[in-house]
Length: 179
Image (tube, rainbow, N blue to C red):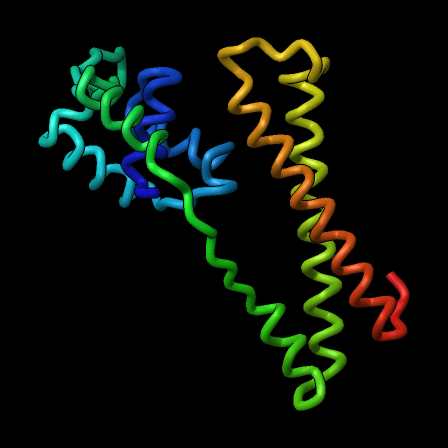
């Protein structure tokens, strides 16, 4: 997947300024596809040249005008083509996994501290996801069709964080450490 596709998804859901789009990435899409604000603005410019998005200026009082982007028909076609492309296996890169492999050769206490920090990170992320689920999807069985994809991504994120917690607990138990 390219950043362009993540931007197209976001703009298909709702038009936005570059700033608003970057905020959406920070709040949701960025949990599974990271991009800096600079990358987003750079790619938006290229996408506009490629006619995948279009923009117009919106006047604002007491602030500079803002440029609002919308997906074009060509952008929708590109997004549809992307959904038809088979998804291959995703590559897992994990510093923690490498540290665990180095357990016999490294600093055990530092590795345990890394596991504890990872566990805390998983717990915090899961709490955030669960709060979003409670706020936006109080009844998962009644998710509207147009929000089903977003719900499924959030549900997958919660499962991944629970799995991360379980793995950290397994590691700590195997090392004779308490949680």
